[in-house]
Length: 133
Image (cartoon, rainbow, N blue to C red; front, side):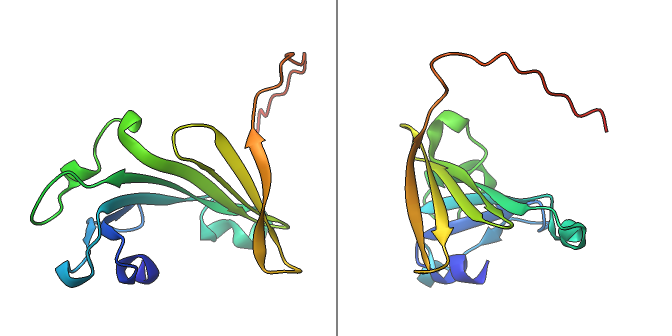
């Protein structure tokens, strides 16, 4: 939250972890509104499962103070959306509205490596899987 608030890119931050939307101070306010939430939140770290973050980005429409109306909009109006998974590997998956791209953190160089656009297979597989836990 601190990094996003200081970036000069965000106007409004919304998360399930916060009771109220976070309005970025005017002198650091940008044109984007960001919603983000944990996947399998931090309470599961001791279970050795992957954790992650989902996010969506909207361009702000209002003038003056940002409001939740800047972010409570149809998904078709998103500028970007994606998720990041943290576990034995760190994967970052993002779309800007045209294709979905996957990046994996390469620890040896400290950078994300692009693995290309994700696509559905041309031929469907006949595999059935169910988790009845």
